[in-house]
Amino acid sequence: MQLDQLRALAAVVDAGTFDEAAGRLGVTPSAVSQRIRALEASVGGVLVTRRQPCMPTEAGEPIVRLARQVVALEAETLRELGARTDPIPLPVAVNADSLATWFGAVLEAAADWPDVSLRLHVEDQEHTSALLRSGAVVAALTTDPQPVTGCAVEPLGVMRYLPVAHPDLVARHRAARGAVDWARLPVLRFNAKDAMQSDVLTSLAPGADPPWSQVPDSTAFAHAVRAGLGWGMLPEAQVGAALDTGELVRLHRREHRDVVLHWQRWRVGSPPLDRLTDTVRYLARQLRPAASRASRASLAAGPPA
Image (cartoon, rainbow, N blue to C red):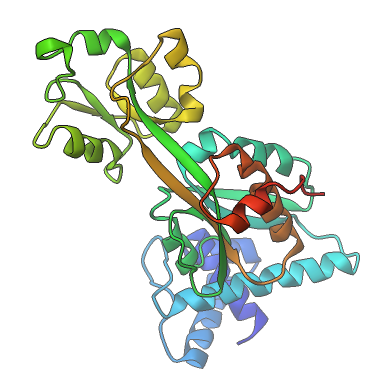
């Protein structure tokens, strides 16, 4: 494996096409194609699909991870030698609710890092591990406690979700004796992968099939709940004081869902990635404590330098 071949592979996966990758590398598409073919010949398998967007094959996923690691280490080495280099890209997978709440503080911290450019991939926390496996990201917020090959994992904390709705919406959909009419009460979902509301319905009203609306943006989803478009499961951070002021009502006193977030990252040493990890670990103290004793100890540490 040669460095220019690994650079070409990472560029093709990032850009999605051979032509775009060639433009980023400053070479011809033919040169990119030749480098990819030579790399595939050296490992004995197809590494990337030839359709748009180009994606790594199962055999290509570990090679893409290696390519990103090599390119990142090269950039860090050049920086240590005093060479002027572009900021090191850190592609990271983040779930939408974290991005709309506590992870915003991570972005504020990263604004003071001139040597790093964050490239966020917004994905459901149950599916971010796939981005790590494919080599698309170097770190991810995930619910998966099992480390992807080549990665380290640690629990960060718990996001608690509450079933809430606008009081006027609930008042219009009361059943006998003032109970919530789950079969008629409109419900929201984030996207097709969002099963949280349906899980609650299965628990509280099996067979209920209420009308639903879809709002695939975390901030807009919370706004839709507050506006009365439907009920939904909101993180405590987005609920805030709305239950105390009466702006929202909790639909069930004991019902909630806890999502344990983990931080998975490459094991390879990288000062920018280490700095990001320290920052995420510290700012995740806003979450409910995770069950891990080691995690509680790490969250009690001071802010990263």
